Image: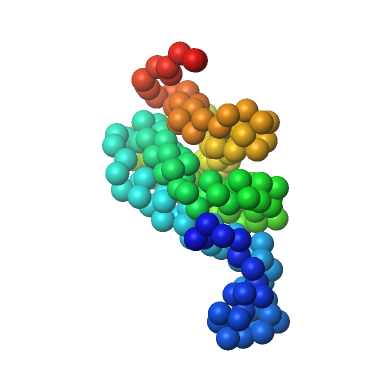
Length: 175
């Protein structure tokens, strides 16, 4: 994700194999992109978890806020969204890619940890709540592509805070 489009023919040549072999190894270009994006997202989430303060809903909100901010600041990610918006959304937010399902599972794990420690008592089952949190993240992180509105990653954390009922600093007044 060095800021340029991944071309399967070029990648095959760099690896010294033909395209058929490359496709057997990694599947389609979209499958390869999904694997790359997930590997980067997974590491980003691990960083967010490692540095998260608090417990319960406060901790989940902090993790989501940090995760979204780190993604939003990643030049490779913003460039991919700019260069291939429709493909990016298909890979990141639908069953055509594996990223959303994996992120939902990761958030569900975080929720279950807080529930097990009796620090969080959500009204929804953990899987449903994790899915809702991921959709909130997507709504604010990709709003420029989805609706044409300026994206605002910070609002994702505020929305998750509102959902989980944790205290949060007030949102700044709109400009």
